[in-house]
Length: 158
Image (tube, rainbow, N blue to C red):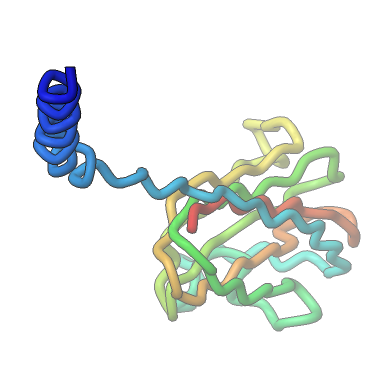
């Protein structure tokens, strides 16, 4: 009886040691944490209907206007790689949105709400952004009423 019990215990120990490497190799998957930044950007600005091709300005559209007069710029540093949504709606006239990486406009929403096209009062940019970079988000008044609000939403993972 003792011999059978000792053999059974020995067999159990051998089995548990042989299973250990298989179990040890499995690590828990690191759970991604998703975070969201949301903000409203209220802007008061006078119109600056700039056709860059006619005025020979280096910066596009109403972004060539004066900060605090024709446009509002919000510097945005990305805490992690993610997706930016910058949008506005319900404004009167023609407002535009831009995303700059340094001096380069990498995204724009400049629908024509005035003139023959009469697009709806909506502008939206949705794009991926890299981790740890600073971008300039520009809200500018092309030919609109003096006040508008843009919504910033940034969803990223850590």
